[in-house]
Each structure stands twice: as C-alpha cells, then as structure tokens.
Length: 288
Image (cartoon, rainbow, N blue to C red):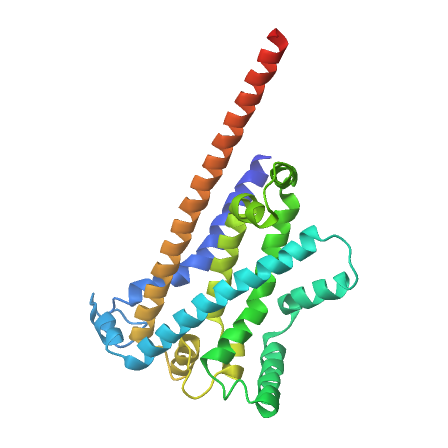
C-alpha cells in the first residue's frame, strides 16, 4: 500500500510538471530583455509595452474576445434547450437522431467541421445572399455549432442528477412552468451553465482550424495571428501575450470556483435548515 501511495504521488508530480513547467518558463521569458526567447538577457517589461503598440495583435485579440463571448452565450442557450429535451422529454420519435446530431461535433475532426461549414456558407450565399462573405458572423455560427455540444452534455448530466420532486412540488403549489424553470431549475443547474459557458468561451478563443476555414480577409482571430508569427519564429511579444492570456484565464477560473463553492455551501445550508424544520414538525406531531 505504501509503494502504491508513493507511485501515485510521483506520477502526479511528474504529470503536473509536464503540464505546467512549459507555461512557467513561458511566463519567465516574457520578462526577458533579449530578443532571443531562449537566452536570458536580464529582466525587462519592454515586450509588454511593444505588445500594447501592436495594432494587429490588439485587433485580433478584441475580435477573438467578442467572438468567444457571443459564441459561448449562444451555445449556453441552445445547449440548455437541447439538454432539457434529452433529459426531460423521455423517448420520442427521432430522439436517437437528435442526440446523435447534437453530440456529433464532439467526435468530428475540426478539419471536416470547418470544411463542411465553409461549403455551407458558400452555398447559402449563392442561394439566399446570406451570409455575405466570410467574417465575424460566420466564425460565431461555426463556434456555436461545435461548442454547443459540450454545453448540452454538461446540462443533460446535471438535469439527470437533479431531483425532479422539487419542480413537481412547485407545480403542485400553482407555479407556472416558466416560473418553475427560472426560480427552481435554473439556479440548480447554474454551476453546469457556468462551466459550459467557460468551456465554450475557452474553446472558441483557442480555435484555429475551424476559424481558418470560415474567416475572411478582415476577420483574423488571435490564434491565426499567433500561428502566422510562430511559423517565422517565436518572438518575445508572443510570450507576453501568452502570459496575459494565462493570467486572465486563471483569474476567471478562480472566480468561477469561488462562486460555485459559495453556491454549494448555500444549498447545503438550505438543505440542513429544511431537514431541521422537518424534524421539528415531526416531533411536534408526535407530541400532539
């Protein structure tokens, strides 16, 4: 047992080191004064100043953030509806086909997804004149298409684990279905929605393959700019950009974790109060 414990600890340390040592080295070299990213030339923050003066990177970053935020929001809305259908509507005609179409982007190669969406947009433009050209709109539609599948899986799994008696009790007390959804169902599945939004935002912000197919000349995303620069060699301003992205993502994950922890504590506290109230009611009934 002791040998197994040490083996697990060593494996865990090696795994985390393999994942995070390259990120730490990237952050360290973002403060390198030398133009050579592998040679330390002293501490300096000049590359962050150079990054803020690079209009190409700033415009691409702003476009990627807008696309990611809009795509994640739409993916949460559509994924929640799809998850509700799969979790609550029971067997219906076409359920297997609907489930397969919803989760297909999870296993579909991104090259196939990007190529098929490009052909779809070209055909739609020829038939109905929309979308006119490729740009931000086509990127958003494409990102919603493949990120919605991840949100659907998260919401469906959360709804399956949810106690339906809470909703049934609210309906028996006269609440409307829409009111039950917004006051009962939505707060309970909110951690899954938040996780789905963060996952969809990250996938959209990180996407390179699909965006390369559906982006136009004036809609270059941040991953596309970074990839074009890396092919000519990594520059220190790219390290600075990566450091900023890592910091923003870490802060977002930390905030989401704190919010989910507080909500879980609040639910546990409410459950304990409800259990204590039920016990007091039972004891009073016994005395009577």
